[in-house]
Image 1 (spheres, rainbow, N blue to C red):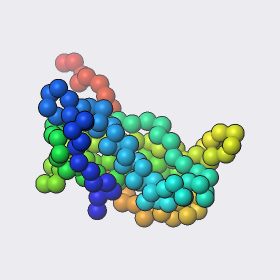
Image 2: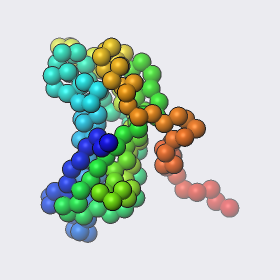
Image 3: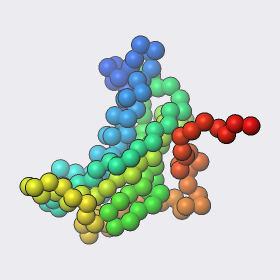
Length: 155
């Protein structure tokens, strides 16, 4: 089941005729918002719980070009978690199921207050909702998860 379904807006297309690299990040940012809504941290949930998520790190991989008005579907898999962090893996696909891009992210749960935000464990209701997310065991992570950036070793 898709976490987010959207279409490539005309203003997202660059001089090469396909979606600009920054717009992939936009779609994954919208996917984080959709994830937040799924786990009870939509606007009302954030106010009620006085809690939100911050993105600590992201690794985006571009797999295929995307064009204007193309349908994009994003799914999420939970790779790991602790009391206040989520390690998630998003996959962006077209409506034929072709992998277009991935985004691996570390998200931090933050308690919000008038004097600022600070890391804090997930509220009980959010924790329960997180437990309902699709999980990939460490020995069965998606092929593109856990990658590091770098040139291949020289021979």
